[in-house]
Length: 172
Image 1 (cartoon, rainbow, N blue to C red):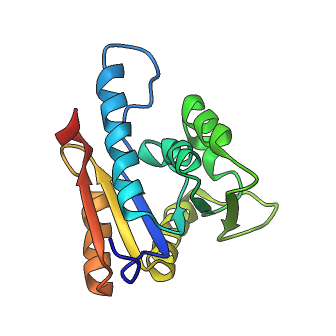
Image 2 (image 1 turned 90 degrees about the vertical axis):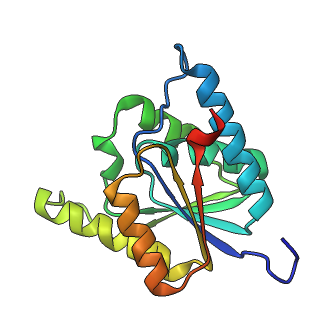
Image 3 (image 1 turned 180 degrees about the horizontal axis):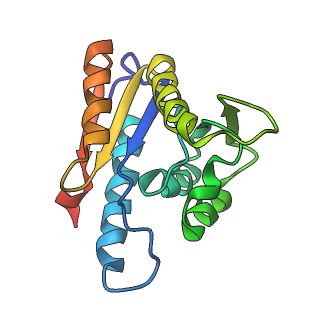
């Protein structure tokens, strides 16, 4: 990608069902997938990445961004958002926090707990925020691609954002 076409801000959307287990028989496939994601991000070479710290891909993306020394902002829908994630996912997100490269933006900030019915709405607003703030987007998925990611791709097409769609299962 030439300097003229360089992506300044990249929104990353990922599959929720990416295997984040560090041990087990799928460890080799996981390593290949992470390596391929590393190389695609290296090729795009954004100045900054925006993402919502969800389970799956977005739980491991921070570690890859650390390796590439890419600044990032985690767009958090509401305080306590990650508390509903599995423990290993929360640990991966926490371990990837790097004071030099990381920042967080809370869509809704406050002390009171967000009611269940509003959580989905805030997650959608976080997705819309990423799309509106980014120059381009990267959608990382496995097979089959989820309805959630299909909806994000449709939103990106409406916004006419350059979009990279990457199936990491092609590299396992």
